[in-house]
Image 1 (cartoon, rainbow, N blue to C red):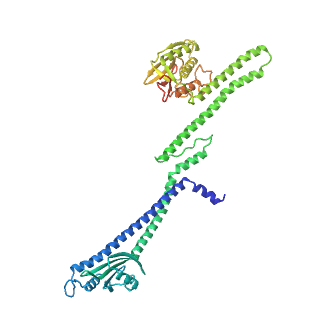
Image 2: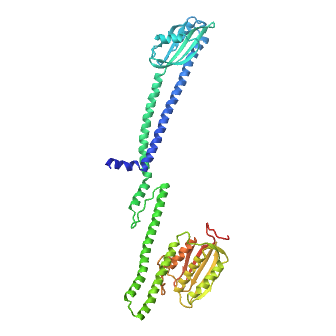
Length: 480
């Protein structure tokens, strides 16, 4: 590709060029329409002025004939058309673009004073045409000086036409002024187009600068560096777009970091049982007693890996729309069932601590799974004989399922992170799992558009509360 084409192709295809191009098209069309419209208006006004001037000269002649008197004898003009023409033409000096002609008995009697643009009184063709006119005539004719507007009026004496008075106005000087004004307007329009296009080019560049910054930022982003952000300036739609893109980048960065941590932690969690299994199998001989001792260890590690994979699948499915199977659930009955299912988990003092009297739209199995996970977590942080209480209640339009234990509690510094994947609370008794249980509980709560709460003090136990709305938005439940 030639260098010129390589330079022009992105320039001509840019949004900035298209904006300025369309602006120029609209501006040029608007200026052309304005120039043509102004010229047409001036021509119409000029024509009206011609009509007014022609009628005015004829009316002045008639007024002089009716009301004036001959300065030689002081008598009215009467039927003396020759004296009327002479006095009128002597008193009225036309402009250079005007000409008055007076005809008497079919012959040219006198013309106005001054030097007109064209001597129509010396054109036999024209004189014969006007002299033969027996009625008022208004028209346009061509002369050596260009188009001429004229008005020819017959004058009668004793009911007989004796004279003709003609007024002529040459169009060329007036039209030349309009053409000169039009050229000035065209020059101004060209200057306006040039200045406006320059201003619009700069303004479009400033307006589209966030888009260019977005492009540069997108080009710099990779799967290992999502830290680039676009500077936010102004308060318009592009500013809102910039904020939205920055927020999207924040979410992407969080998702990538979470994914990277997830892969690292998952690899670490799987590496341990795999290493244990490999080590035992490599050392396994033909001894029956050794085989009997190794097999339960290998199976236990495989079971732990299976539980780990199952937990990962649950967390992955939590983002899918079919994760929940909603139905109408009786809170009191569900609470009693959960307590019955929890009792075999460990040797603890299990207690039902209240039941909420309501029906909710929820996934019965997922809610049971979440509360049972909280109960299992409580057994891992309590000792035989400790109390674990399970209950439910309806508060402020939401159902609250809680599991309260009397264990060592959760340190304040860890309360905000134990619901994350692979997080484990410190303490004397630690979970043997992969640290996904509370993350699953939170995923189930959020799938129900609910939340999970923790209240705890070190040495005073912990209370985990699953908060669910009574009704799910846009839910369709049989029987409701």
